[in-house]
Image 1 (cartoon, rainbow, N blue to C red):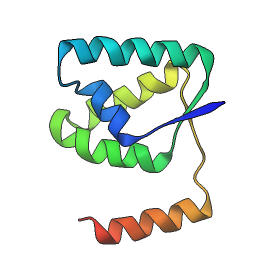
Image 2: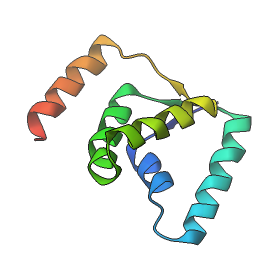
Image 3: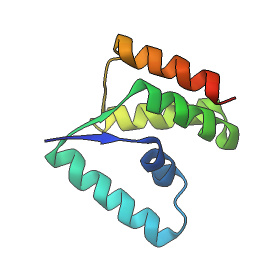
Length: 94
């Protein structure tokens, strides 16, 4: 089975509410990365960079995405439908 990480997961992983949450989410992540194929969509990456980039800067946010990739998370290719949906969303969200 494959697992798709969403923007909320990435943000919670990077900015956990508590130290206990940080421990739990990291344990979960490293447990699943060994057992499942894990993906992030390019749209999720764009959403994450938009939010996290404002908090910790674009470069640091990009480094975190690279860390996910080096841990074994794959970036799913963007389809034509994905591109259209991303364009629609960008028109709705400033």
